[in-house]
Image (cartoon, rainbow, N blue to C red; front, side, top):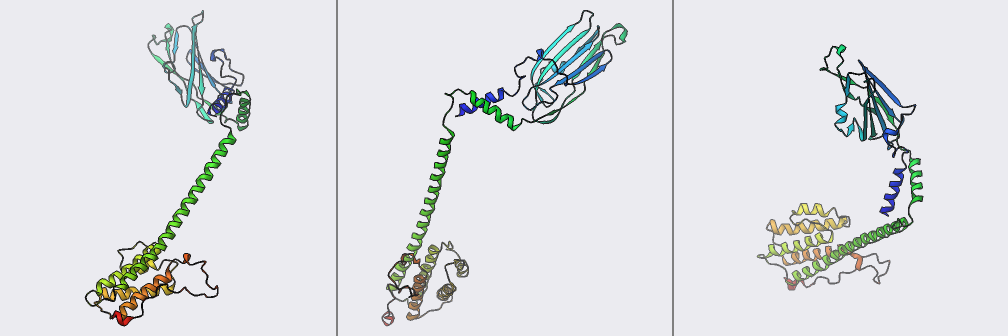
Length: 361
């Protein structure tokens, strides 16, 4: 396919101008060419530019004709130095022809092939020539050099018409060798479409995997919290010596559950800061937030205020924590169970806390 595109471009560019393969010396300026003549004493320099309305990509020709009588030499050292640019124009070709007439007069002709950098208005800059007048009657004794500066030539370069490009490409396509080619465009488009479908499917699968992973983490948060609460409950209510550690552990269980259940990452926050972050969870109702606030404040009274609850109050606080976890658990695994649609109530706690508080006391 790359070879086909390159061939199209080559053929299209090759058809851009009928002057591309002509020698500059064999060309004659047309009647509508742009000409500027400068005279300095006995010498005369004429600059001719054509075509007068070139199109971008078309070669532009500049011819310098110098005429001087016998005894006068004119040289253009700047151009002869081989400079590759003439103003903004790139010099892609340069030929020169200089000879003396039988009467001793000088005729010099220089022809430049130029390439415009872009479409729009441009100026062919002045050409600098040096003249030495060695004639006895000139009064210069052949030593003083005089400068001849030609006039600049304004030139408007037209852009390449889109219709012309399309016509050239179509013509070039018809000239291509049948063996030149590659993968058809339809196959490329099908391959791109298939790749896009695969990419979209991969993204959807990845998002689904992450969603399932988050759901599993929230479900695991409930299971882990319930297991820890059961273990703490089995150890019984704390006495005055281990009340601090018992309530610290109870508070940590609930905070850890909330962090995994609602994607809260705040292990180092104070109770007030933690409640502020937790309140942003949309799933937590006002009643849940009130219940959580009361529970954490009860734990803080023991941890920081030196309060020592009795056995019944400690077990009640643990029961409140367990009720909060049960009420805020992910309900996805309960959906679909055989329950009357009109029940409208939370399912019963599977493992209610023991009621024998007298034994715990």
